[in-house]
Length: 569
Image (spheres, rainbow, N blue to C red):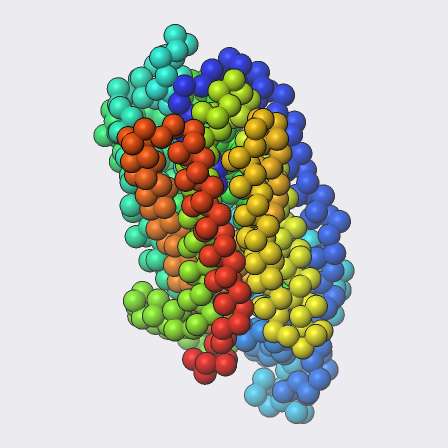
């Protein structure tokens, strides 16, 4: 995301004035999500959440259906077994999608002696199922993810290395704590990314075997505490420690969230739900850019304090609102029936990672994601430097316009990409084509369209035209995330979904090497006498566009590669 880059040498008063005008536009991004939640047909759950199946394994007068891990709807007799009960008993049934209060009328069945002569006749109303699943799953996860991105990216906007007379210890962390540009570079990258990258793989495996709701709330509380710790830090070393703790906690967010969405939302709406959640990257990045307002009003310490408090509120909301982890509900049901809890398999991160990579489709998907991350991170780290040098008179306006593009265009692209991906999967099924081939058509087309858009953005003669093409680039390029995660989660076993998601996050962390390499090439070019703006424009144009092209090819190869079933793995 573009919020990866910090601002040095900004003019605070002017930027704050622009940002105040921009606040209603940020609110528009949040409102657009709410409108989509209300209006989108993704919440028509009649055919997704509850649907009968011919030839059910048990002859019962009524049956509770749920979507199982092998991607088919089946009768779930476990949810009906509640021991001996008479006809007047009523119990609460917990769905794998959302918690419902359902009236059960028990009646004997001669065809099912295994249930002690008692089976359930379920009376459900599909109208009660739909938007509630998104409000109790995607929305709290989204708010937590916004906190994640806001907390980790706010640092980039709370330092100022310019020679302006307006710079003070009150508003600039580097002045207050006395650290250099090189120390800031380590703080912004290695201090966070180092442990974040290593922890991502283990976090995915941990999410596969533990309560993901508790994991979500706990990790949010930890990184929020680290943010608050940074706000009261007295030395650079204390900030580094808080930054390392934040990186560790942030690594546990996406593996738990994406697998929880996978288990709670029908596959026909998986890409849409993933895209809604992925919008937290852009909304959090936009809020980070607007942290300058908090900095001007409260100082850098007060700004971090407000950001940390928001994270703690999100952690509390995830406890109160977020639906119970479906696998925990299933384990509780099994214990009530058999008196035995499900035994946890020994944690083997390496074996799980090998199993994930054993599928050709997943290997190509990771390679495509890696090159796509490389392009995006090059834009995020070096884009601001280029646009400020290419259009110095509009450097202040760029901060606000960029926040608008990231917050609105990025979210819009992600949501539309998810909707189009789900629709492409339906069309592919109707044509007798595997649905994941349809889903991957979206990132293929998006990556191809991003090539000319970005090239024009870094080769336009005016600031206005350059920003227009930057907005177009975000609209066409950021559609890849939801469909990619949906394909990844459907291509690995349910028990390894968290590990796969952790490995996906790890590819993004490794992708940070791309902007570092670009920086080395940039330094070599300028040392040979090439003008700064020209050198950076050429490097960004070639590097980013090449990454987009390679990702499109790899996404295509992934769509044609064998699936788990075809490889008999």
